[in-house]
Image (cartoon, rainbow over all chains, first blue to last red; front, side, top):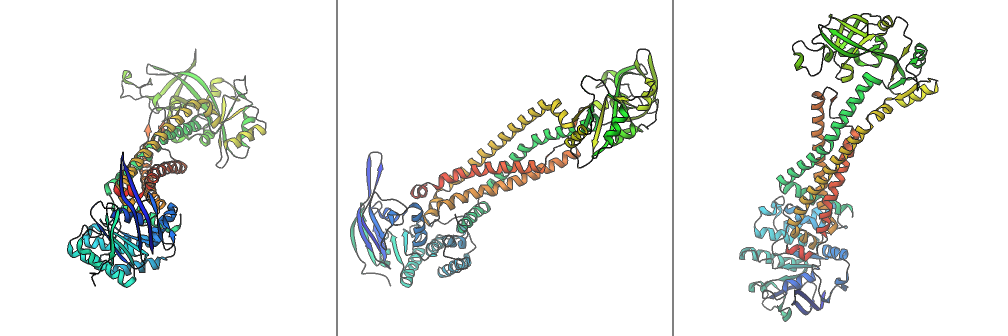
Length: 231
Length: 404
């Protein structure tokens, strides 16, 4: 479970103060597929970055399964990201010099509790799940956008994280590939009870979410269950 | 940092080099190889000159150990006893006396002042390779009288006009020719030229050699004195050991090793060489450091977003730092390897085609220790140059890196 208390992020640009996030309080349940929506500049990505420990808040607390994650040291935050979190970026963010298999294996290779055999098995397993086993030796530039995003999801999932963050994962995809990616998230959520927090500004994506939180000017303006959920 | 982290850092480094810009990798390796060559070439040539001069001084001037007259005296006296004593010592290959006399050579109207070196040809063979440098005729026999061997520059060349000569000569003496040696006012003697030699050592080539027996005839008495005695050591015996031994066994003459003499005679020159070598080394190291610093800085700046992403997915900053550091390590190892290879090929070429001057001939002289030392220095400089920008970029916060 993720508990967020009065989370604020204020940027200073010269004399101007920008309140990117202005006192967000939320609770995200385990196994939930949460959609964060809102207009551009509403604070969606800022919230995701703070939850994913990619940025520091100006104030507030984030507690994950009883652990105040903002109080961790830098190294502990890195390990928390490695062991507990998965992150899917808008622009796939794959390492261009690594093959599909190497990209997917990378986070697993760093885990101290995984043997080489396990890393290999997990990586092949997840590649099979996303249907890209036959492209394992290809470089990211040799794949389509949809395929790259599936690899990005596989990389985020290989360590079986507690929480998966996805920052507008379909922003650069056509509707067919977007649906493929969202179906994959849906499967992961349904079969593995994976907590997923996804930022989106596409209206039709909400069909996949259990719950939708809408932000405006850094504040939560609506938070409710999605009654029209897909599947 | 654990084994797994190092493995991931190495994988990232290797793949970046394998699949990144090939021209940049080749250029960087080439620069390091050139820097290595630059670092070792000039010192290697100086070492070669030094080695060449040292070897020729040993061969034609002093031997490994030089026994010269006591202070205030002109000659080593009681020669036979001294020679017997030295030759009987362990580690001494052979000791041979030298005596010299100024003379004027006359041949077909040409007149040339030279120093006549008097040797015992049999013993001299064990101390100096002069006998193997005969280019026409033959070497002196032990009891030869009225015969001399002369250096090629002294003999001269008949096809070169006198005014065109590099140095004065007898204008083309040939083996079997007769030349006149005038030892002093009113005393001259006819000699047959038995051989002409060319050693490549200026001093030896501008000398005329005759035998001990002949000089005894000139002087009209037994020659039981020498200007100095040159001693050749047996393999495995150091000059220092022989010097100590000679002093302990009661050789009362002045005993110097070749190193002592070299230090006295060439100390300044060696110091100058050392300064030039040091400057060359420092320049090479600075160039390599700056070039690698720039290469890795550009690489890290271009990869800032990727660095941010790696950190976002849980890759520790130390892994990222070592990724770039290891790239430099791999580039440095390859660059040094190719630099060493290039230098080795150059040294082989120069062994076959040495730099030849009238004074000395030199090759590129590099010991395994030179290779090791320069490799380590260059490697250390490369690692510093690579790790500094890698460390800087790995410290950047994730947000700034990802926004790049």
